[in-house]
Image (cartoon, rainbow, N blue to C red; front, side):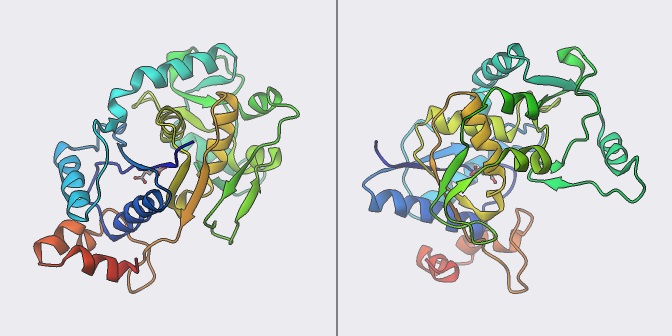
Length: 285
Ligand code: GLU
């Protein structure tokens, strides 16, 4: 199988040095393997995605010297595929509608035992299960995965993935994804947000499979989200690619760069006369 990787930015702000690191690393890994580097625009959050950020992504990446095949996959064109997967999971009884607001979840997670603290997983607070057996109609809210039921359908199947980079605790090699971890530290994740009709987790898994991605190269901040992705691949009978989670680029104070760090936007370096070589020197590539 041809080594295929991708860079999958969301057009909700300028790309910064951390994105440059991720994109260049993926591009070079593909080149070294004689493989393919794809670009995918993750624009499911239409309330935040903007055409001018998307245009700037293309400009920045081309300026850095990257090339990718056309046409570029855009998640906003893939809503029908996400819907089909949700229909299948709903028909199998693995989803339920959740009408909770954030504050309901917070309140239910802290009660009833006094002093109980909500558990935070890769998708936020581990859902306390309020709506799991409420029998709400599908339109009533977000769609959550009933993780216990989902795991029952996978009885006897081992869930794991190969990590070629490393996780936050130095995890590498074959990484088991245990039931205990999924139930207690991930919980009933939202697969379709009320406002979007899908979610990052569902879309990324379906798109990586649709693009025949063999190696996912991305920042270490998404290492734990991979547990959800492995489970979804098993449920949807999709292949599990190899993963390579890389270091995060931090500022001088050790804080990880975020979209709002416009001072480190690639476009700004570009305007100020830096060269792509300068960018590589700053990020150590
Ligand atoms: N769209 C995600 C982001 O911009 C990246 C998703 C991924 O690489 O899996 O953070």
